[in-house]
Amino acid sequence: MFRALRHRNFRLFWFGQLVSLIGTWMQILAVGWLVWRLTHSAFWLGVAGAMPFMPSLFLSSIGGVLVDRYDKRRLLIISQSGMAFLSAVLGILTVSGIIQLYQIITLAVLIGLMMAMDTPARLAFIREMVGKDDMDNAIALNSTVFNSARIVGPPIAGLLVPLVGEGGCFLINAFTFSGVIVSLLLMRGLDQIRILNPEPILTQLAQAFSFMRRHDVIRPLMTSLAFYGLFGFTMVVLMPIFADRVLGVGVKGLGMLMGAMGIGALASSLMVATFSHDSRRGRMVFGGAIGVALGFLGFSLSRTFSLSLALLVLAGFGMFLMLNSLVILIQKQTPHELLGRVMGLYATGFIGLVPIGNILAGVLASGIGAPATMLIGSVICLGVAIFVLGRSRSVLKL
Image: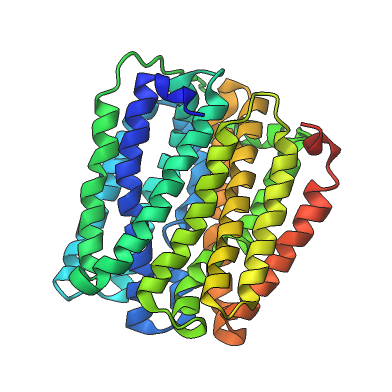
């Protein structure tokens, strides 16, 4: 299960991320609660949730070109340092009591600019830290860090917000970025692969897009990912409304709801880490897609806190069974010279379309309510899973 941790560089990165991502999840919860407290508007909740991801829609593909061209470790140090600084600014403004909605949104966009480079660099860097043989396991273990932090971070934030305020959570997050930065500085013996391609950026992007469009496996995977980015993964932005108005459990309950998704996601990631190289990843993508859709569909209808927690465990399990297996399949099918750019396109589908979905969810929730909005999104995702992934023989046979 943990074989990729025998690589020293990946081990450093893994533990550094664990520290950093706990702070990140604290900030995600605190930002959502701060915006809800300031506005009590589903629309602005959707906008604020969208802004960190909006730059990825337009820039992650360009970030993928940079990843193929330059030292990935240096790119990650730059992006992590930038996000630490911006989180500190957000914390200082909040603690001082002068925070305004436009400042939250502006800083979220700037953090998103860093993420547009950070995400493809992080994904492509995994193969260079562990090699191709341990790549499957490393991707799954990388996801366990994300989801372990998802279990721990939101409940901590839910307890700390009443004590130190949202600003205290932002300042803690700024400090936790040091975990990844220090781990990157301590790495040794990296054989970084850079592609010396003199062609223009748009030409290089066209090469990656053409490869993706013609590939019988990657095309349906990316198509499904785009729909889930618009209508499935965006449902998390509505959680403060469910916690406050639908279930009546407040900010502490919000931390438990988000932590429940993390429990399911962690269980899924650990399970994927145990599988061998020849496991049926395509069927896992399909099963995970069905699971996340059914989990959110049931959650939209639930009015009982305990049942809602159980359904979010299912949604989290399905989400990361789908995502982990999907990333492994894409990386296996992509030649190294295109990996950064294809991971940039992946980030566009997974992260870049989320802001549009967040804004759409906020607008719909303002008009028809959060439960109805989540129900519609879940039904759309269920249809995509059945009619895109379920009918793709190229995916299901892998």
